Picture 1: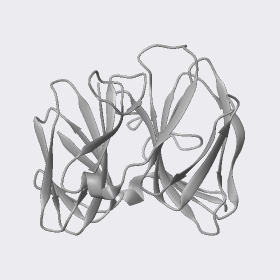
Picture 2: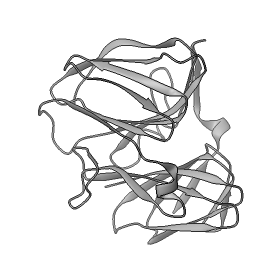
Picture 3: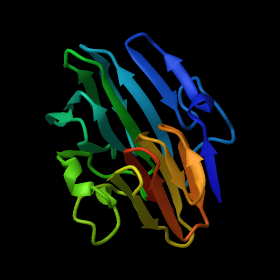
Picture 4: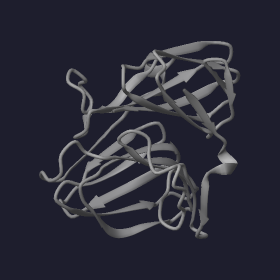
Length: 231
């Protein structure tokens, strides 16, 4: 089963400093058919204006992954962590029993990012945060895991039986991902038109996949892919 959710059907909220598209029900956007996909609960496609951002606010019991597409985001939290995550890199926050954080675009240009929330396997636990650089050349022509709670994945940890992976694919080339039985995949091309198991999709469309053994993505243009694999 492959369901392509066109970009113009996503939830939309424009706050001036923040222009957000919601793949799943979020804030004032509600669609009973788009409440999540497996353990994936939120995928927001955010554009944050220069010198603007999210003031301190709380979270708990959620794994929050930020994939920066362009620009950079600066994080600060109640645990004393701070860091700047640039385009192509990833930060992960395990909210656990509770954490307060802020996310600001301190750059002189707009920052665009995917904010991905995955429900943890268990509630509670101490909150945590981490960030890591992932040069795009390392994921050229193949999926590279960025964050994971699956045993054996030596990457940024999350507290869920889930994996976040990314790939860059040149036009005319393809990349494949094997999806285990009973698992859900959600795929978005940050840029580039693609073909997924024979179905065409445009940049930033959401592609919900299950009951498919192998996902084959052909790049119709140079493409940058982000995928979540979860139960």
